[in-house]
Image 1 (cartoon, rainbow, N blue to C red):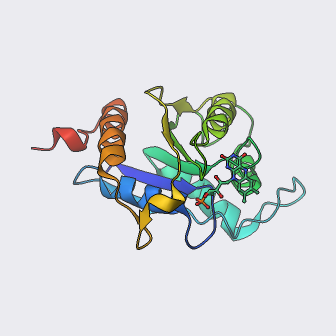
Image 2: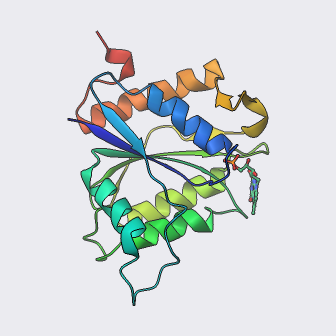
Length: 183
Ligand SMILES: Cc1cc2nc3c(=O)[nH]c(=O)nc-3n(C[C@H](O)[C@H](O)[C@H](O)COP(=O)(O)O)c2cc1C
């Protein structure tokens, strides 16, 4: 069974990252399953502890997933601290963590015009540092995301068509027929 794990870099209830993530996951091919990680409960990284149930759950979810889909805003030209914290917990042992070889699709959003492109580069750099298999398609950056939600959902058809094309290639990379190859 091909299973995807979605990870949102924003915790707020009306998050556009979360809305985009939900829209993207809905487009995954039939026969696959998905889940969204809850990174808000994970404590601050402290190597003297094991992170408790929340950190252990995230690590297990990443390990079990065939692919990860990140959607995150840019905070102060980089990724949000809450996302970096979650990644740090799952990053040990160095170069041999659950991220090693894990297919990862990165999508960034912003309220402004740049779509979080700097955070996109930073997240890919971080994932590469953990030897993840970062999908190298065209960058998926979504500017003005919050104001494009309708009733809390991201439904912009042009953007979703582009994302679906990338998702298709990402699925092929993992070895499943993507949404555009559905019978
Ligand atoms: C602490 C903070 C820092 C931010 N820094 C940036 C930034 O560097 N670049 C940017 O484009 N937007 C920045 N923003 C605006 C975000 O793009 C905007 O709040 C976005 O909607 C957050 O994503 P969300 O809707 O998923 O919560 C920042 C927002 C916050 C709260």
